Length: 305
Length: 248
Image (tube, rainbow over all chains, first blue to last red; front, side, top):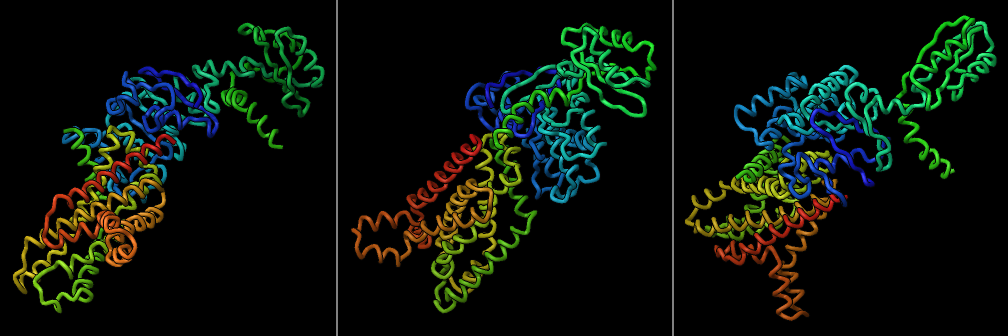
């Protein structure tokens, strides 16, 4: 990690993005106090994680990568252990376990050994452990890894709902999750933050943001792109598809183009032609992600050659 | 008080883990079979005609423990690291010391249970004659303390690796050194060329030398302190190793 600094407030869901090996898990391990940072400090709820670890850890619920759980225990036994170590006893413990078993749909496997669980169930067991004590801060390392699409949807919903009252950090490399659950996202690459903003802001960094896709029939591709290139707000024109007498082109805006200027201009430019489709694109997160994290990896692989 | 509750919780989980796997039952059965066999067949319990467990029974303990205790201790940390639960455990609101103590106490209690299950021998010797039960009790205390020392050494090796087998082998070797230092052939070999002070120093590091006093029924504070200090030192080393892992 290299000089990362950020903060998460209550009511925020922070998505942590980055290619494999970017340092997502390392950052989370530092937040949860598993790895002490070699420089700088981590503070959770006002408690320094290194100097005052126990009160800090009490506030945190943590789902480590790969969702480890004691394989020699039953799900109920494991949750019972986690509850006791969180200081829950008696009726409170029962209620807490009951709540997370309901939330994570663990009822059918409650008395099964963790060893024999499917990956989805094991994942949810560990997730249940992390929310058992209703923590203020939730750190989730790839919470939807290994879940089926329904379960993914469920977990995202859960994160979003809990995000209203807690501070949540979760890492993922599934970009749609950022849209589905985050209020803010950070992209890190090789230990450095390369982007930090709401999903909409990040999307705005995309070249695609505000671009106009237009399909016209009965015109040659060259004629269309020449015409579109004359628009002052156009940065460049790409012909996306050309078939059956119909051409689809994408017009990328210049950075200073005002809202709606480009679509209006494109609409005027294609007047008189038979327009089949005209669509304003939103930015795409995967494109932002690639443009921010890929360039250097590209250089690296070239160096190898 | 809170820290004691954490230690208890961890120890309870650890003990449960022993009995959830076949390890506990296999260990107890093998331990009892071995003690029975060596006491009666090899140790010549009946032939001695003595109402005592000192030689025929307790003499074998350092050697049983050499193989059996590392088998109990090898999984303590190696398994946690392999499965990844170490990260879970150490990010819960417990200090590393609580985790180390909890785990150690659980295994030590388990060894106490195995040792306690040799009670039929005590009944037998009481039925056949009039032994000094104080001496026998002293032998048991010494045996348990010694088992704790072996176990603490196994804790170190278990924390060093992810592979339980590696942990087992390394701790057997380490414990072998600690035994051999006081083994009579080694002492005889040493006294051939080394000064008596050196021989004494080496022998005083040995489990056997200190255990022998217990066998004789002598509860010497020096022997108790010896085993306890090995335990404390080893657990401290375990803590240092665990901290080293976390620093990456």
